[in-house]
Length: 421
Ligand code: GLC
Image 1 (cartoon, rainbow, N blue to C red):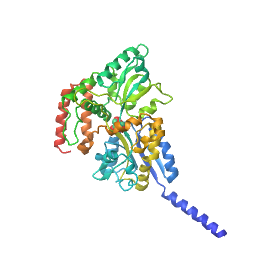
Image 2 (cartoon, helix red, strand yellow):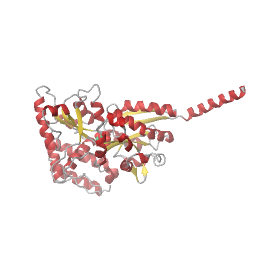
Image 3 (tube, rainbow, N blue to C red):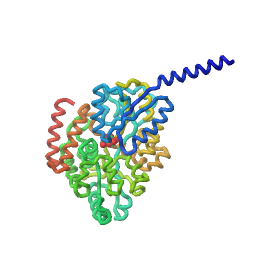
Image 4 (tube, rainbow, N blue to C red):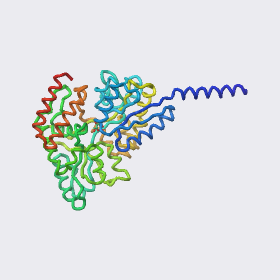
């Protein structure tokens, strides 16, 4: 009896030692936006307790463009220090070779996610990353100010301009810092997202179409860019040309903007206790342009988890990627971060809809969102995008007209295509 007990005890300690010996030290990189890193830290506690692994977060700047530059260097150098990467929806075709194929590991859960998002992360049959959340932007508007001036939520950019100007003029007496509209105007990927929306909303296409046709040099695209240029220095601050997501949110959350274009994460933060506009705003689809094919357009965004092929603990790293994209974590993310889930059932979840009532309408908006041309331009997407955002930034800054800049852009894209994308 005694010996049996002793043996059982010994066996238990051996098992414990074995599982501790298997435990991995993992590292995940993630951009730092809002309180996203604090959220991630909190979720990881459960993973660590369940698996015995430890996970270090390696924080990165919030700019997706800066992250991409760094990750490309690390991956090209075969960096084994990072196991799991947080990846933008547009990166899959460019980084596919550097990540493990998650097809087998995710077999049991892929069907829970929207098929179009899984497809965007699948390159030549390889599941490059597993979705964490999707993104489709909104027009954030101040309910209180629209009410005060008896205005409707604008449905077109022209209406937005007129309403923003009137409220800005009226409010300046009591708030000299207020502007009508803030957006992401810095020269980076975020400007590509904003400008694709303007162009598409005017019926001006998608820069490069799904079949590879370069469509950007057209009268509707020119009209769209000229319209937004007229905002800069009037309803939008000159400094907006240096704003990324967080700078626009900063201005907005201080109560210094009537309208803002931003992603859903700004909803939870805007309703935080330290926000000057808590409870004073709502969201609507972005305005439409003018012309025959005018529509409201939202660029499709979103983030995923990918596992480095240089990871020394690939099995545990895959577990981590699956955990961070699981229904459980996506639900927490939807409630606390107001990020749009990629799991269909969460759009009917009462807790999610209570925390983020707008999500009921956003399911359709993200499903109709406009993809950036990362699939047709493959490994060249970043270059295509950077040429596009430069042409747009120059136009907004008054360095050449939209017509001139889009003509130059078309020529540059033709050269790039000619050298094979
Ligand atoms: C958001 C989107 C991402 C996009 C980025 C641009 O994070 O989810 O897809 O590239 O904004 O700044």
